Length: 94
Image 1 (cartoon, rainbow, N blue to C red):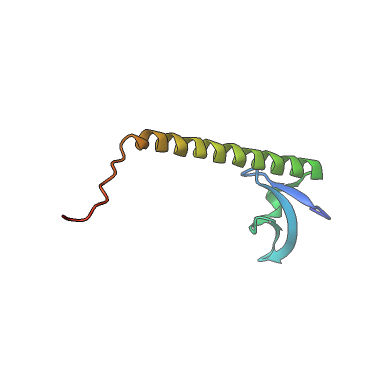
Image 2: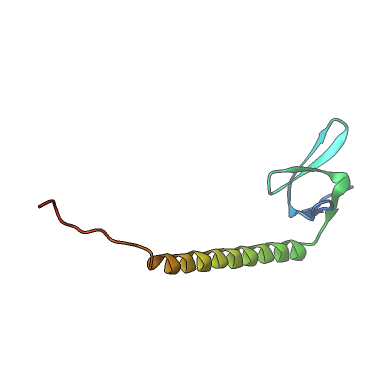
């Protein structure tokens, strides 16, 4: 079914990856994507290299946006907590 496929999409979840291995096991053919997981080839569809690259670009952009949002929330919490911090004195008993 797959022939020589470099990039594929798992139909059930939309997972996209680079095909790194194909194996026969228990009468079924499985393909391994670059996420390390094997998928039944009956649920795999070939995709173009450009579709693969676009999905990776989108994922990286999404990770950057998510990281930026987390950083903004962390800074906001620090700003809110700054007024609540009390500093103790630095002296000895005396």
